[in-house]
Length: 504
Ligand code: FCB
Image 1 (cartoon, rainbow, N blue to C red):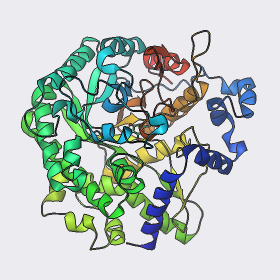
Image 2: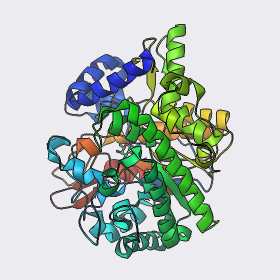
Image 3: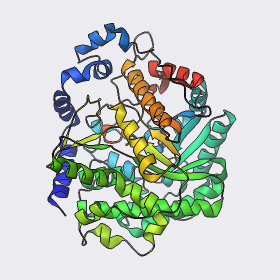
Image 4: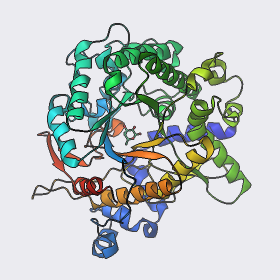
């Protein structure tokens, strides 16, 4: 493993150990106050003095639309995931997942928060469906909880778990909203973790069986399926940084995990083809444009390798049937990834997909020494730089490098310090600014020839943000956790207008 890789891994581990707040403060300082102006200011009303200036600046009018019309048939939506909203952790035969274990381990999540109740969506889904209809959503992306369908990750499917998703899917259809389901959004059955988790090749085959059971029950009712949410985050946060379940810090295991997650993806694609020919399927990848931090050849080389780990490790395997050689060379021939590849694995991983789901949050600026720098204002999530052009760059790059495969955006959004005001409103102008600028970047990408068909804001509603617990609010809809009341934020009202007019 190269020096660069080792540095990268150590840095990630260090980042995860850093208190988020402290990191956020230093990151903001690095971003520079001037560059931060309207977006950051609007998003952090309490602490940033620029907030007042932004409020007085007519160009920062949060209701402003740009007059950019999207193609007819473009579908606007929102996304969630099972563990983050459902709650009902022990109901109807649901087994434990690694996130139940992790969140119940002292010190792992902020304030010791867990997804036991979360937004109680399991019980409140009819009202949530009405809310989606009220917003005008055309598509809704949710995930299926593996331990609801197979409590221990194997064997006969639990009908009560499947029934919940059947009711949800039917409810979406009744309201004219297209369901988009993710098979796996990180909540691995704990029983499978106990047999080795994603380090075990067998778990990929268990996932293929689980996918087949889900397709059997729901396959034809869901027009678009996504396999594994952000395999990279499992690799980096679950197995290198250790700040996500299962909380390991083992870089050598991490890239074997990357391989098994992708094998599982390919097995699920094949299971869908075997079950029914009709619905479409693809991976859900968080992709980060990587730019050299300066003009030096060292920064160019380091940024290219960084891109390999962040993007090509997942895109090349699925869309070209080969892992990127520079990453394989960097990991070395004795790495567990290289030794873990069996004959035929890449053919499974590269089973043809119908679309690629892109999740975009932040770019990286890579220095010659392999470290990254902040360039743009950060959000409440210390790792997120607000840079809408990065979305344009990533979308156009996929089309340029991998051809005209249909794309959907399945996550994009930011956390804001939203508060429920005395008059019952939640004012989040920073989120409106953020969404408008990112929608405009997507519009430019479409104009440049990118076959982008839909856009899902992360997230429909505030939810359990993993290690950050309930502190970070990412929703269009505010959740008052004490009462479970839902309140449309200003951004939700604004988004409803965008959807109605198909115009940003
Ligand atoms: C993504 C996750 C999603 C949510 C957002 C903020 O990486 O897929 O569940 O946590 O980040």
